[in-house]
Amino acid sequence: MTVTNEVLKNIYERRSVRAYADKSVPEEIIQEIIKAGFHAPNGANTQGLRFAVVTNKAKLKAYAEKGRVMSLAAFRAMNEQRPSEVGERMVKQLSNPDNDIFHGAPAIVFIFTTPNCLTPVEDASLAAENMMLAARSLGLGSCWIGFAKSLAHDPEFVKDLSIPADHQLAASIILGYPKKEEMKPSVRDEPKVLGWLR
Picture (cartoon, rainbow, N blue to C red):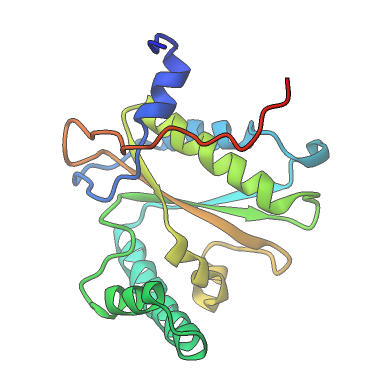
């Protein structure tokens, strides 16, 4: 099947971007991307997601370093209890002090769930994907940063962004203009369908 639908083309061409140009993203574009995230499906239409944005360069650098150090401690502890090849790779990667977990992106959007969310994991994941697809359609790169999850335990981070105690950090999406003009889509195998009752 030849893809002529722009929505499908956007989905197939989106990829995680880990190299960004030194160019800020206009606030109105970030707002539009957040709006796209908030328009994702959510359990019982509770609309319980909340968002926080960081574009301040000094704070981005500080949070990236805190996230790296906190994630390193977590992976070390996990790898001591249950050693694994992936765990060792993560420890090695995070041990590098030059490792910027935000990849030099000029913006990051944190997605929080509230107690009002009936399906918090699903709601945040759907919002994150909407946001990454919206970013791609607007000429931006994006990437979900799992290492940023540990920032939820940092008092300064919580205070800086005025995060209520009952909110949970569910996803962290970096945004920016890709360094390369053309970002080739990731190669994917054909999907494997386990069953199909007709």
